[in-house]
Figure 1 (cartoon, helix red, strand yellow):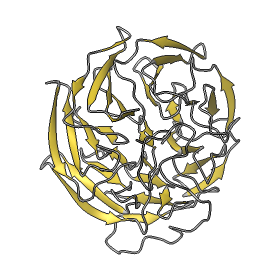
Figure 2 (tube, rainbow, N blue to C red):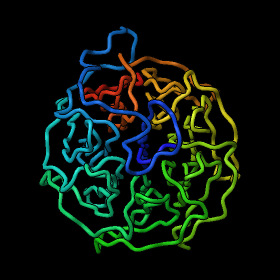
Figure 3 (cartoon, rainbow, N blue to C red):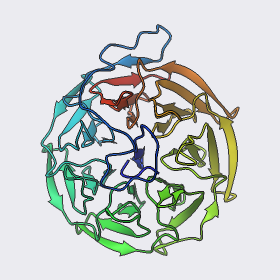
Figure 4 (tube, one colour):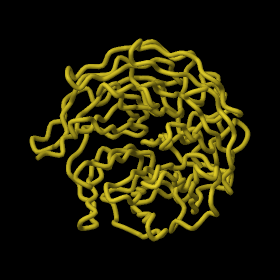
Length: 393
């Protein structure tokens, strides 16, 4: 099982979370592990532009520090904040990407190194950074705020419990829901709300099932779909929805199979697209599923070109979804890029990164292109490179 690993991501998104690694698969990890495989610090990988003339990806500026399982958040001014992650051990550094120049610029660092952390844009433009795992392999309860005007971090209130591999989602009213994760000794079912006006966290209703490395996606009606994830027994096959007005989660329902460290995004039609993930300690999913909030129903979708976990997915303005990177069954990182179309229900390869990436981020920019940042290769090496995906006219 994949602990302290993720996301995505979500992701965004949500997160996401968000993050999750893998190398040689084995029994459940604990928050004291850096993942399911070793991650040496030697650097190589993706230092050249993507070569194929028809490839819709092009190289852009490089990070100041290589990283994987970091966060990436689109700021109100169009820049992207890239924070934390791991370059061997967890790191505290952060930097911003400016689409106008195609360059990364270092910002002030966080107060502590953080990997498997959540990052959420707040009303007013600040970014909430919460939890994660530090360089001493401890889950963190602390949180901090990034101020884009000052390019600096400041402390804010702490969560009620340490959380690594949690998921965070901005609610419609501006508060932030943080769910699940691992406190260093157990997987959590608790959730809490961050209020930007007070800078404090308060507990809210708990999930029916402890979860980490799950997806969390805000629905059109304001509810939050929390899907899959893992606990001490392995990947989970249920999902539940948080109702902000009631402060409670509904009863869980089956999601057509277990998925841990999957990726999810909200499509333009209001459905939630969930892709890949692990259905067991050794099995990586090659399928995607769809949640229809109107009918409260799950359905099986297309088979992916590549089975993948710990990848990233982002909804595009034309209603499609971009799927990038991740890990395969054998623990090797995936370089392929594919696009899912809701119109025909198919997912097709559209290009390839020059090498595989797991624990990468994919962020939709204001011009409709997607910034792909960092990640780890096999053998496990964090990357400082970045690329732009252009969906074309």
